[in-house]
Length: 246
Image 1 (tube, one colour):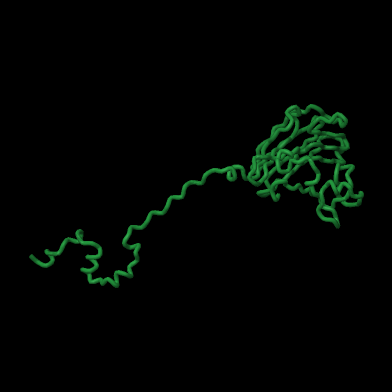
Image 2 (cartoon, one colour):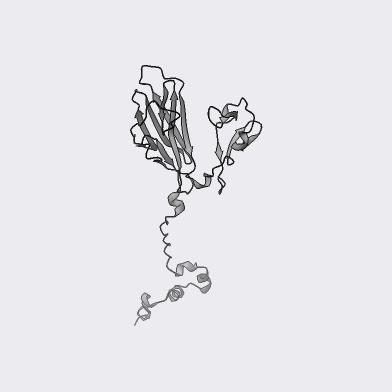
C-alpha cells in the first residue's frame, strides 16, 4: 500500500489536522481570525414598525367640517395641530362679508345684524391636491371662492377671492374669519390671559392687559375689530398652551 493510500480521506480530517498536514504551525494558527472557524451569523430581522398614537395622530390635517347643522350654509373646516393630537380647531371661513351693498354673507344668524340673503343652500367642500376649497355664487351674482391648503408642516394658507357679478360697484369690502380654539383642549380656557398681543415698547403682553391700555395710534386694534383700542403693532395673536410649551 502506498503512503498516499494510508492517509485518511480529507473528509475524515479535522480542520486542525489538515492545517498540520499542510505544515501550518500552532503560532500561525493563532493569528487566524476566530470568525473563520464559525459560519457567518445571519443578520437580525428588524420587526415592522408598530403603529402608535404618536405616529397615527401626528401631522397637520385639513378636513371639511361642521359646527351648527341648523346653519347649513356655513363654511367650516377642521384643522388639526401638527403635533400628536386628536383635537382640532374650527375655522369659520369666511364668517362674514361686509360691503357697500350690505352684509352679503353671514355664516350664522344674528338677528340684530340682518343679512341681504338668508337661508342660503349648503355648498360642499371639494378636495384639492393639498387641501380643500369651495365656490359659492350669491343670488345677486357675487361669487366668492375659498381654499385652505397646506403651507408647511405646521401652517396653512387661506385664500378668498371675490368676483362682482352685479352691475353696481362692490367696494368697502370687509372680511371676517374666525378660528375657534375651544376644541383643542390645551388652548380651550375661557380667558384672555393666555392670549398675547405685541405692543410697541412693551413687547408681548396678555390681551386682557392690552385692552386696559389707552387707545393709541398703533395699526391694529385689540378687541372688537371696529371698537377695539389701537395698541398692537403686529397683526398676530399668540395663544399659549396650558399643558405644553406651545
